[in-house]
Every structure is written in structure tokens, then in C-alpha cells.
Image (cartoon, rainbow over all chains, first blue to last red; front, side, top):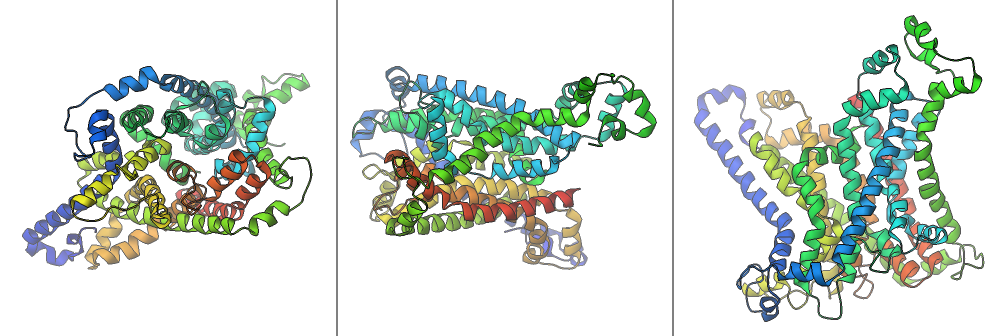
Amino acid sequence: MSTATVAVPLTRRIGIGASLTRNRRWALIVSYVFLIIFAIFFLLPPYYMVVTALKSDAEMARLATNPWFIFDGVTLDQFKILLFQTDFLIFFKNTVIVTVCVVAITMVVSVLAAFSLGRMKFWGSSILATGIFLTYLVPDTLLFIPMFQIVKSIGLLNSYWGMVLVYPTLTVPFCTWIMIGYFQSIPKELDEAALIDGAGHMQMLFKIFIPVALPGIIAAMIFAFTVSWAAFVYPLAFLYSSDQQVLTVGTVTSLIRGDVYKWGMLMAGALLAAAPPLVIYAFLMDYYIAGLTAGATKG
Amino acid sequence: MADTARTWIPSAMADTAAAPVTRNGFQRLMRRRSTIAVAMCVPLMAIVVCLIIYPAFYSIYLSMLNKAQTRFIGLSNFAFLMSRDTFWMVAEQSTIFALSAVFFKALIGLITAHLVNNLPVKGQRKWRGMLLVPWVIPLALSTLGWWWMFDPTNSAFNYTLRSFGFAGIPWLSDPYWARFSVILVNVWYGAPFFLIMYLAALKSVPEQLYEAASIDGATAWQKFRHITLPMMHNIIAITVLFSLIVTFANFDIVQIMTAGGPRNMTHMFATYSFLLGIRSGDLPLGAATSLFMVPILAIAAVFILRGVRKRGREIA
């Protein structure tokens, strides 16, 4: 797949510059062709969701036209039904509350802990850091059954505040882990200088470490946001009335009524529910990717 | 506790820094570096102990109770599960799902990473941004989209197949096609993650190595085999193992598209324990089912930790 051109020994290159560029152009064309095929595979479902959401029910029921395109004209009816005749806005509000709380809790807990584990080092701190990484590898599908019992005993079953309690288990370990990496990459001279100037540890954290590690903090925040926005197992197991439901489960379960699926409305719901992560990704792609790759490269 | 402020800062500065410490013992303790450090970790430890470690052990206890949770029955739940054919089918399907999905995710990720890396630097961002979209959409919602494309009467795929003269495929109603479909969706969702990890790793391979190989007359394949692969070996291992954990414990796709059917053929450990524990109300049996995931997850976790540690040393 990689360029065949560079394989030509340098000694022979000088005379055959023309064929070299031709080879390189061919490699580029082949790359583009395959990339377009992969891009179609990756973007087909979102495209089809958009097409379905913008179609009228009548066109969908006719079954005659090519489903991949819109023939009867674009309509926003599905979005209107979704917003005014279903509980979608309640799900949205609940999800926003849960996500904001979870991101706030996650950032406070993991920045404090990462500063301590990455910079201050105490007895057992490296073991603790390793332990944090291991807990990140514990999947939610392993814990949801005991967690059901725990949430039930606290009385938070069927309440979105229960989600605020359990989601940090998905976000805190990873965010702490990548923040440790970011804090460790800050030069030691900075905190020594601050200490000589008489700064306390808290001042050091807020005046130096948080501003300097801001890219890492944004990456961690985006991670916490996407995880709590997309969580599925916990709300499916713990929430059952629609006034407490969150977007992922609400869209997938509550919007389906009866045997006839209102696919246009479902797709409109899925798109609107997926919009916030997509918008954040569109604007902060580099931070998003930094957070994604940091887990394996830092620490 | 030797690491007080005094020993930590350079000795020349020790006196100036130690001066503000008061005579009061408690205050001095509070000003100690290690005390503050531990205090800052308390919220984290509270979350980890109360909401991860405690539930994990509670799960073990729970799995040894009877359905009404009134009586301790030892390992009977595990024995019961192991005597059921359905359980072994779940184990088989979880393994098939995880291994095949991770293999294709890694393969597609590797290919697309190389393709993107071949492009002129200016265009790479755009392509990378486009190809990562499946990973950004919450899995439950994109699975809903896939489900709609697999819909028995309105399937957009079948429409396309029929218009080319082929017969429609029973995507989710035939057990083996259903297995194929859930794996396909998982590959679609997870391949972009591999692409990003590999692309980052490819960028970190020093250009001089390839130049040196070119001078020695290495072919593209030789360069891949003897430079790229060894340089990326560790990151590939970490990504594959990590993905193995996540894929093995996957829940959303199967739960939404098939809920384990047809004939329980697509159940994974996660969905099966959800069915037994939450839907049928037998929490102990559900806990026992999910605990069967632990050995495999633990093995993968140990190797990931080794890989990450090694990588940490390489970077340092």
C-alpha cells in the first residue's frame, strides 16, 4: 500500500526522475481510491440516517423509490414530531444535567489526584497510579449487576442522579491517567521556581499546572463528556420511567411505540442525540484525538 | 515519611522554604507535602474503592446467593450455568465476536492509517477527520442506524442487492447472518480508533530510517516489515489488547440489534447477564455470568500494563 517509488535506490533515482514522479502519482491515486471506498463504508450509516430523517413518512411507506435518496422533497416533519410529540426534550435535558455534573466531578477529582500522583509522589503513589490504570480496564458490563443492587439500596434507582453517581467510574480512571502524563511532562524547574517564590501547593496547581496543562485538561474533559453522553448499559439497567431517561436509551427504547417503527422520527432523534459530540469533535478535533491517543502513549 | 519540603527542594534553598513552617504540630502535618498529596487523592480513592473495587467483590458474593438473595448456595450458580448449552454458546459467540472483530478492526486500521499517511500532509487532516466519525457518534445511536439499514422489509442493503439482481439477505433473522451483522457493526465502529492510534505511531517513526532503507534498496514491503512493524509493535499490541477487552465486554450492539436472538445465537456475556440479571430478575445468576469475563479481561489487562510500562520507559 505504501509508495512503491521510494523503494528505488537513491543511486538510480537521478536518471529516472520522470518515472519516479509518475510512480508517486500512481501510488497517490491508488491511496485515494481505497480511501474513498473506506470513507463510503464509514460514512454510509450516518448518511443514511440523515436521508431517512429528512424523508416524509409517505415516501418511506411506498417502498418503491430508492431508499438511499430523497425523491418527494426534503421535510422537517420528523423533527417536529420528535420535538413536540415525544419526550425527546426531557431526555435531552436529563442528559445535559447528568453530563455536566459528571464532567465537573471528573475534572475536580482527576486533576487533584493526577497532580498528587504525577508531581508530589508519596509512599505508594506509583502503585496507586498503576491501580488507577487497571480500574480503567474494568468494563461497565462487569459491574452493572452489583451496581444495580448498590444504586437500589441508596434509593437512586430510576433517577438520573444515580447516573451522576455511577458514570464517574467510567471517566475518572482514564482522565486521571492521562492527566498524570500531562503533569509529568511539565518541567520540574517551573514548580521549583514557584516554591522559591513562596507559593503553596494549591497555588502551584492553579497558577501553573492547570494553565500549562490546559490542552490535556480539555482533552480529558472531552473524553468525560463523550463517555457520559454515550453511556448505555447503566441507564438501560437503572432507569425505566421516561421522565428520568437519558438520550441514548430514550431514543432506542422509548421512542419505539407499537409494532410500526417510525423510522424517520427515530433517525431524527438519533441524529439530534449524536449532534453534541459531533459538534465538539468538529471544533476540537485535535484535543479529541490527543485524548484518544494519550492513554497508550503517556505514563 | 522522608519526603517533606525540606528534602525535596534543592538543599541550598531548604532554609528559606522551611522558614514559614509553624511550631504547631497539626499545622505542620497539614503543610507536609505527603499529607497534602494523600489528601488530594482521597476523592479518587473514594470513587475507586466504593464504586469499582467494592462492587467487584460484592459481585462475587452476590453470585453465590440464590435468586431471592436469601440463601448462600456456594458455586451452584456457576455450576448451573456450565451445565447449560446456551451458556457455552454465549462463551463461543463472545470469543468469535471479539477475535474476529478485533482482527478486522486492526487490519482496516492499519491499512487506512498507511493510506492516510501516504497523502500530502495538507489533506491528511481532512481525511482523518472524516474517517473518525463512526467513533464519535454514540454507539447506541449509530447501532440504531445500522438496525434500520438491516430492517427486514425496508432494508436499504437488500434494496441495493435486489436492484443488482441478487436475493435479499436476512441480516438479523438468520442466526449466522445476525452474527456477521453484529461483528460488521463493531468493526465499523472500532476501526477508526485503530486508524488514529496507528497514524500517531506512524508519525513517530523517524524519517531517517526509511531514507536509510531506501539507499540500501529496500522494497516497500521490506520497509514495512523491518522498520514500521518493529517500531509500532508495542503500540499495536496495546491497542489490540485494549480493544480485545472492550470488544469482549461489548453490550450496545447486540442488545439493540438482536437482543441476543435469533435462538440466543448472538448473545455475548454482557447481554446474556443483562437478560438473566435485569430482565429476568435473577441478579445472582447474572452476576455469575458476567464474572466469567474476568479471567480473559485480567490476562489482557496484565499484558497491556506491561506494554504501557515498556512504552513509558522508551519515551523517557
